[in-house]
Every structure is written in structure tokens, then in C-alpha cells.
Image (cartoon, rainbow, N blue to C red; front, side):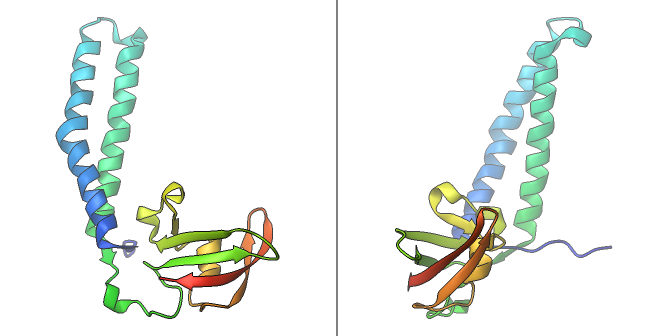
Length: 158
């Protein structure tokens, strides 16, 4: 049997997953069951789009519950004490500037389970994070992205 994937994350990231799991189990699951019950009352299930839609949503919710339970069970919390203060690491925020004259960008490097680019959290598996991990303030780093290669200079690490 293959070893299960470990999901590195911050305590806040794990808490957010636990909160989502509780919502799905206690609220969303019941809502979907109620939708299925109502759709069944419409009669013929073979041509009942409401029923089909509710069953698809139920499959999605149950799949997400399973995924969240697995992520939470296999979470590895990144402790503040494990982080080095002078280099880019999981759980740290890094500010860099794209060379030669780009604007500063700041991202927090997190595990894939809590990545959310819109909140400035990028996965440690992303091309940018992979290139920055282990680097220090002032380092110039070449980053391979799907859009091509870019060069950045690390400004701060928090």
C-alpha cells in the first residue's frame, strides 16, 4: 500500500479546512438531501433535471468531504520554530520584484491544501515557490513559469 500524501500547512490553514468540513457535514449535506427529496416529489426521475442536479451536487459535496478528511488526517503543521528566519521557507511571506523594473509582489508560501493566489498564498509546489525556497534576501532568482522564464530579486522575507 502506498504511503498517503502529507499536506504541509499552517495551523490557520488546518483550522480553515476543519471549518469547511464542519459546514459541509452539518449544513450543506442536509441542504442537498432536502433538494433531492423535493426533486423526487416532482415524479419521473428519468427526465428530472432538478433531481440530476441535486445528485451531482451531492456527489461533489461527498467528494469534497472525503478530500478534506484526508487532508486534515495527513496534515503536517508547520511550526514557527521550524522556520529559518533568513531564507524563504514554507509558511513565510516573501516580497520580490520582477527584474528589470517590475513592481513588488508579496506571497506567503503554503502547502497545496491552503493555496489561494487571490489571498496571496501560493503553493510550495508552484513554479515560483519552488524557485524561491531556500533563497535569501538580495538573491536574484530565475523562475520558470508556464509563460516563460522571469528573473526576480528577493526584497524581504517575513
